[in-house]
Image (cartoon, rainbow over all chains, first blue to last red; front, side, top):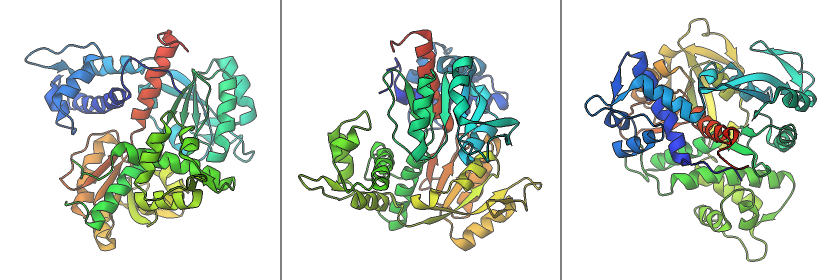
Length: 216
Length: 216
């Protein structure tokens, strides 16, 4: 359904975790870090960390380990977060507002340049200084501005039609927050950011703990 | 770090995806569904779907497949979403607001009953009819109300101290949205809902596609 990448999805999903640790160390003014230190923050080992970090091309030194700033930069380059990409967001509901207000996205390479909604009562209102535009204007603007990323924060019922319009307008990558299973053409990147998946793991574990199935 | 469950994390994360498909079918008034139909919505096969659905205990019939309403109910029971759990949320920023405004959580077994923030300017304001309380009041209230779930939507810098206070107050499961690596005692459930992990997969794939590394 989505294009293959040379690096596993699991590694890609661990790199931001390392980045969070590294940014914490940078805030504390620490210069160097070892794989063992990073691994200590998670429940996987130093060998896994070392293997994951190899993809960035940064080499540590025997005694000191990795230079923190080098590693931060290299992970960002690897993830494509050093070049900021413009994105359109469709769906000015609460999730849409949260994403618009999330001030850290730019440091992760994402710049939401415009927001659209189908509801005429929302059109014309401002969210974090961005005026909500009618969704009918999205395709022409996306084409004109060569937008590559579309963020979908509409309801499950509306998601497929929004995605169809995005793809027709030349958008190459869809970040979907709607709880719907979407159909996309070959070659288009679809990444689902579903809170319910994370909640499922939490709820199931808690149920087992509360039922006493699992020794605490 | 977290308690083991009898079912794999991968299966737990696929069940909400099936649920979204099933809820779509229910809206369309469809009675029955096959594993093959569900599998067609994803890039894994019918055997995987059948194996995942076995954990719910629901059995399909040879010709008709699974009854949609039975399967929805069984998945919700399995995930613990049939019993609504009360949760506290700390951090009345944009992500906190988005979660408070997400109307579907109750159908996923989550009821956010109170919201807290450290910022005196936010205390006393209302978000979706819930008054923001000072974070200093959280531990005593969590104990008195026997709250099991704590949702963390504060900054990376504040997350650890909030989690420490939650754990000390008897909260058993932490749903963390802060981009920080948290330390929790044995037996406490920690689930990280990190948007940056999902964004990492999207950005990396898009970078490769735009660079022409991957044939579209």
